[in-house]
Amino acid sequence: MMDFSDIRYEARDGVARITVARAERLNAYRNQTADELLAALRDAERDVDIRAVLLTGEGRAFGAGYDLTSIRPGETPALDDVLERHFNPLVSAMRSSRLPIVAAVNGPCAGAAVGVALAADIVLCSASAYFYEPFVGIALVPDAGNTQFLTRILGHVRASGMMLLGDRIDAQRALAWGLVWQVVEDEALDGAALDICRRLASQEAAAVAATKRLVTGAADGGLEGQLRLERDLQGAAGRSPAVLGRVADFFARSTDRRKSNPPTS
Image (cartoon, rainbow, N blue to C red; front, side, top):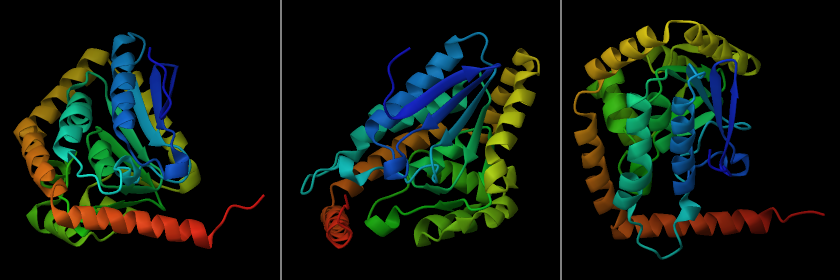
């Protein structure tokens, strides 16, 4: 098992708990985060005692999308390479894993984190959670499987509105739209997700794996091609002058916030 810095991995009673542990960044993903999530999933798959995976975020967010501080000011980001090497392998591995994966969305879930959550088999969220697609607003395109998952779950009209307008979809609307299996009170989320993982772990492993394979096959026809298309279009978007301007604005706002809220001793 590799050493992790961006996530925590715990295995107990047949359940592997994987927690993104970058609470100071609202669990925004950098490349290393995706790599560690994939490595943790592989560790769980190699452990014959593990029968289910619980994926969540530390603190008050599930994941704030891609961490823009991974991009240096003035740098032209190679986002197609980021997707090819880090995020697409994670999404593909989650969908093809023998293990059922339960995502416990414990707060804001944005951008790439939406794709990761929806790559799970069962998604629960807290009452305060919301889903958010900020890509077009920063001159980029949705990735990490978002375009396939959202369109197939929501249909063309709702998926287009969510991705083009960038409106926040709160927990109750997510439930009504079929994005999540269940909404629970914030303090009950972890227990509810763990209960589902234990139920899954108590089932016949071969039957669970085969059922997951059938559902994934029915839902995900063309996923690999869609991930490649997201990669190519995101790469082109990331090289546009508009993105450089939006990234510069991001860093300017971050600097202004630090000046207006200086650290206290």
